[in-house]
Length: 376
Image (cartoon, rainbow, N blue to C red):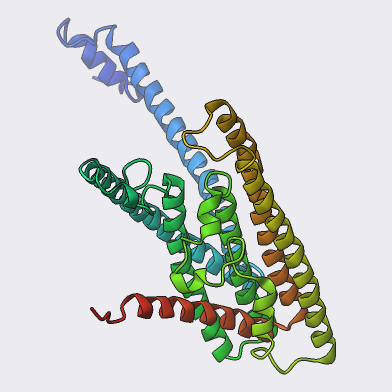
């Protein structure tokens, strides 16, 4: 019996037939086919996303490499080295800023200490007033408000000025020490001139302090109570006499050139003429003020009508004292600045050091006088 060989079936046909012959339980459900397709699609999408991410990361990496290369090139190049003049200017700016911060800190501390001193002074004044109430029998030793003479005449503005002047003296001592060290180090003229200008500006600051109090208490400046007793012997309209200062300095700043001698002598002569004009004006004011007060009979008790009229006229004349102080301070200011212009930086430094030492000795003389042993 001849048996025909079975025809060759394609691959996968047997599996399909076997699956069909396996019955209902072995057949694949229609719902499983789309799920497989979704899975295949999601896999393809994930592959595409992964490939896209890898491309984006490559682009970012290339950009990062380019930036790093650019920054590294710029770092290798580096900023151009500034010239010595710029470096010196930067160093001077840093030093000036540092000194400014230190001065500001010291000034704040001094203001705080001044506030404490002012509070203590107010307490002392209150105690003096309380004592004056019980000292009614000593009217000849007390002021009009029951205060001891010298205490009742000082105003709160004058007390603040005295404390600011004490602060100015401390700062002046520090500036003079720096100037002395600069002279001893034999600094060049241009560097030494900076120290001299700092000293000159400090004297201008004192004139500014006096301008603040001249409106409120001009008598405090005229009396010289903000100075020591020995300094008050030489006080002239609230300060030193410029011509006397020039005379004292002539022997301290030698040698001088012929042109410098002529300039200083001319300055001394013009200063003396201005001083004489101011002194004559002040004498005329004194005479006019005395005549105004004594224009009516000095009978006791006074006629209140005439009395108040005389006081009003006298008050107007006293207000002109402010002008005398301002003009005298302007003359002192011009004299110091003119000396600075006539002298070299080293001569100006010796000039200001001599002025500081002169007034220091006057203050020391006052301390010695006040602490001298007294015989009973």
